Length: 182
Image (cartoon, rainbow, N blue to C red; front, side, top):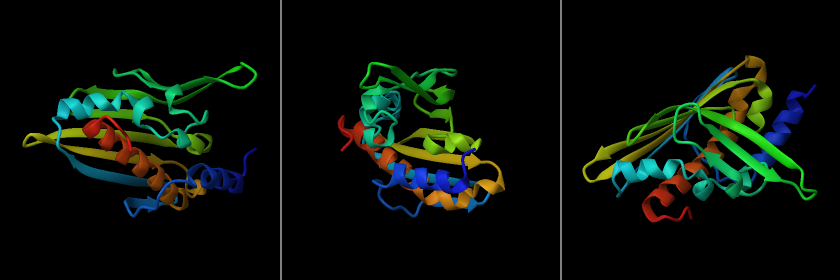
């Protein structure tokens, strides 16, 4: 059985490279919500199209394999946000990070999935990415809501998750706007 201390240590190790952020919208022992907003000088269709190219904008530092090229994300409800790779001995490994719940082109993309070490906590989690027209540009939003047992101490994990998702959100916005995540 995994102890809470082991889970917290794993989260700390997984999120160590992420920058700090103050975007935690709500946090309690049984759940948290983080969110981000950014204006892009591209139309919503272009911003939306960037989402499914997750292997091009998600940071490899926040994958199990260490390489974002091993990520895939289908663009339809029911599709997998998955990671597949072969280890040094040639054995295949895989992780289902989530499943697409909603795909409304040019508007909203939603994935159900407890990312990284949150999987082991048995929580419910939903990542929502929105693209809304503003003039000739786009308001890009990202929200991640996690709920579970109060024994999970999710409020203590929220800042680390926030920092990782802030990195991913920044990279998505950059990729949508310039074709490069950095």
